[in-house]
Image 1 (cartoon, rainbow, N blue to C red):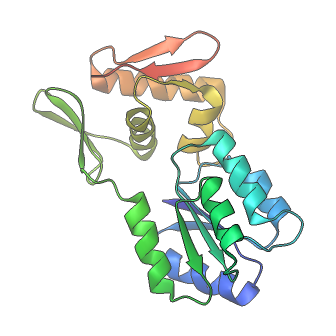
Image 2 (tube, rainbow, N blue to C red):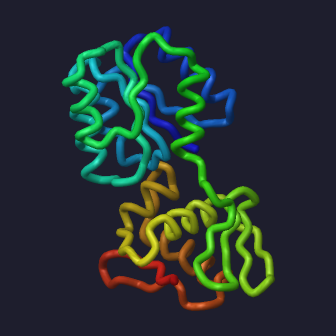
Image 3 (cartoon, helix red, strand yellow):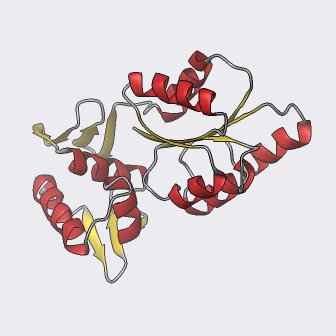
Amino acid sequence: MNILLLEDNVKLNETISKRLKLKGYKVQACIDGAIALEKITDGYSCFILDINVPNVDGIKILKKIREFYDEIPVIIISASVELDVIKESYDFGCNDYLKKPFFIDELEIKIEKLCKIQDEHIYFDDNCYFDYKSSTLTIDSKEQRLTKKERLLMNLFLTKKNQVLSYETIENYVWEGNFASLESIRSLIRRLRKVLVRDYIQTVVDTGYIFKAN
């Protein structure tokens, strides 16, 4: 899982980053709000934002995140106990609020709770499902293990079933912020279509793709 951390206290930033990396998470750590703002579309599964940081505050970044992503968890960490600040954070779409000082264990628990897939088997048809834990796809009792990019694409499709996904959205999520050519995206789509057998993935001309499922 890829996490964006914004915390301008260098020591705390390093401490959080180290702990999360030990848990197996990939962490992009920022101490400047303007830099974090530039990175929000780089394919993250969770955002951890301090409010009072240089250049662009965490609330403004939260608002911008919600313009792109409705469901990706955002955790606010702040020393502020002002009710208006806490209310504003929730009004603009944060999922949880953690007051400083806090134990890193608390943050880990919140991340695990917010990002956990409740059901390891994600069904998209009566006899077809994706096992998130083992990264396998089962269609009519036939199991197929997916590559990392196939798994990420499958997860994206199943969290956005019957919704049009743009090329940019796929690039940001599957390639985790790295550049991907249109041909690379199409090649990945072809591979996944071959695995799926049935025509679940439909092309939306000049836009992207949609995963049609029950």
